[in-house]
Length: 261
Image (cartoon, rainbow, N blue to C red; front, side, top):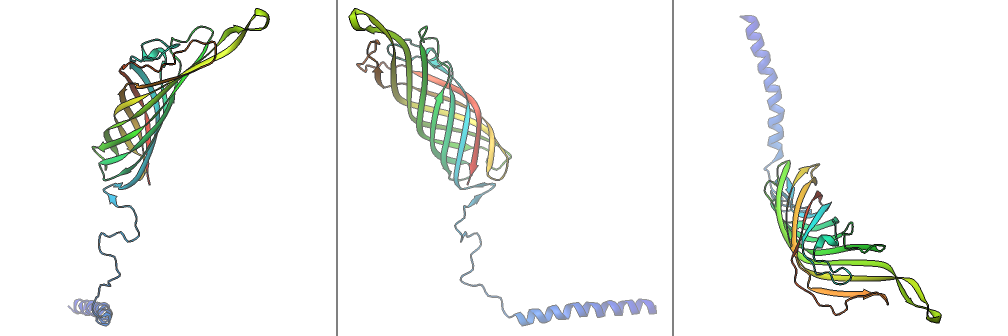
């Protein structure tokens, strides 16, 4: 029995030695006060971006590229007087920049800017050099169905304006000295513009807290309302600017990366 009593007494002394300094420290600390300058719970005194789940509300930009195929008709004008869009643009490779702001975990709004080019279609005359390029500017939004998951499924839409430029360079014969003819290079170009409606969707995988990467699919439909020409002397070219309303579309697949600041 003696060893048990001694053990109890030793434990009691050790416990008293631990409790007494802690009690003295609490007693000497005085009442706990909350400073008026202390930030309230949930506040953001440094102006940092508010976190929304695993995503942040704030600036978020993106960059993408892929491959697009055209469909529908285009009134391309002489010397590209072929109805099909793919007679001018066999395919399109865009460089696509997204600039915007994430309002909340699911909602993002912003603008887009694209430049695109690709192989010329089958309407290029023999022994001529043909090229085309386009520019697109507009506004867009996306809705994210699973913004806080490692795999983020999203859909979106947008509206903007598009410009398509086609150019052809070939040799023509022009009058020379002494009733002769001289072969010189001549160039004709056409610039068209019109509205475009965009629908899109994709999937993004987390590569970090602010970086995501994944595939996207897009479809854009529009028509050209304006038309202008520039032609070298000696090359046939329509210059009256007449347009015919023809509906065309682009369907694309690619890869998109986004970065949230």
